[in-house]
Length: 223
Image 1: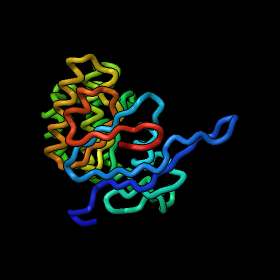
Image 2 (image 1 turned 120 degrees about the horizontal axis):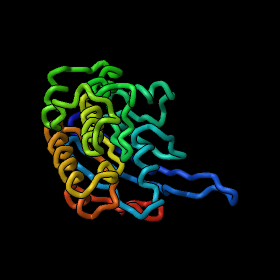
Image 3 (image 1 turned 90 degrees about the vertical axis):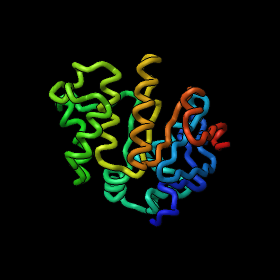
Image 4 (image 1 turned 60 degrees about the vertical axis):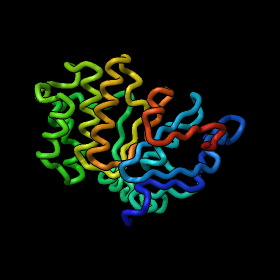
């Protein structure tokens, strides 16, 4: 990968799901690219395939056809193990449901993916903790945190591994309006600082307007 290449590039991505009446097309040849340090909003109606596209971009789900390149590498040609390795080192995902590990405290949750990737850097982690206001929460467990605090931990965990691509699926959807705005401010600030490319799925025009670019998914295609 060169500096001029996108950190994420999808070409002709197709996906269908089985039904009693036969395959139901969800993605019909989607093209999408994301540069390092760029923020991109993906909008669309419920059921339009936004989350499916995000999962394919992150190697969490396979496309039926098309090409997905992450950090210059075509992950559609990789084995499951090799694709998992790319997810571990180059891609991080922030979900609406937080997905923290309940048996680990905040400090261990934050370091979890970075340890798997062999990229745990205490200096990086400390900066994230301070930026996200988590210094006093490190020994607590997820159940003791508010929704906003849990989402901050999820963001810190994602960025601690220093990914090239950050995928966020409605990351403020479970938060009240004030907390959501604060978490989004922090997320965008950290993305700008780290230089990761951010692809964010949202139904909110307000959130979408804060991204560098916006794409709308409708009838399996983007516009």
